[in-house]
Length: 397
Image 1: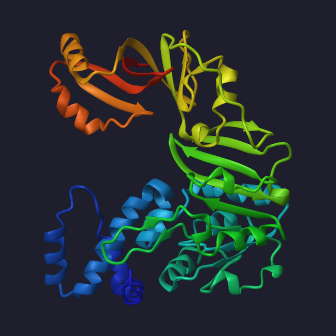
Image 2 (image 1 turned 60 degrees about the vertical axis):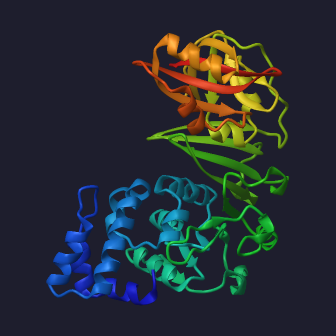
């Protein structure tokens, strides 16, 4: 979104149109544009309103009913934390007794909103002018929050009691270009090494992508991988009194109003026990996989892994756990496309979920090769079991 588009949206005409236009699957965009243009509305305003309405519709999955009263940019919405996750972050600062926080790289203001809602004084800093303007609008209801359109590296951070960083992890796209994630910690903006230097000076939280390399995580912090409803959304690093005593690594699963957590006091975890394939196969939540806490979960549930470096668990008992998606193993075959196709046809499988780990199989290509017919549903898991490349025909629990 360009500056002029945002100015148009803030006008009385723009606000009125935003209240009128609701974007859903039934909206005929062409007819809507024609109707608004026929009513005398500027073409640029109509385009800006439709774009913002689409963003608000998408934002509902992160912000619920609040999304309809907020402003977003494409990149700002993409990188914004879900409101429930921001609330967890804000709770850390409150529980640590912190009264004032600098939200550095605030985006459209999701973290600052959660902090301000808990009574914390927040100064939110954002480099991009339009994104900062969105944050200013979104934070307007809170007297204890303000937004600065500044470079975070130029701010005197010694003025703040604590800080929260959300360094840019992607290149901002132009036009229809998609944002591209940055995987090199040193190419973050601001520079990740600079961020870590600041974290040594005061209580700090840092939000990074869940694929952030373990070797780039400092030893003396709490690292928490967060999954929301099975969707792995972030890794957060906590320094100083924001880190919990005795916890070095943790996986947090948020399901509705429920939270589940696995923790470890150690930064390095032993490998889980490798076992023979049992009657059941279990797929752990990705927060467990990325946090390398799979051995902790396996030990708690008396399960083993099917092969080194393969994150599938197995056992002979049916287990119900929020951390696991379970499958009953019906057959285990050596992976051979022709034999697999013949066997699935014999079983009458026509509806097939295909999953893989430790295999270069392309599920979409394999599905075409199998030429499925029949009414039976099954799950096919292509993976390594011990040293063997196997095709597991399963039934989801």
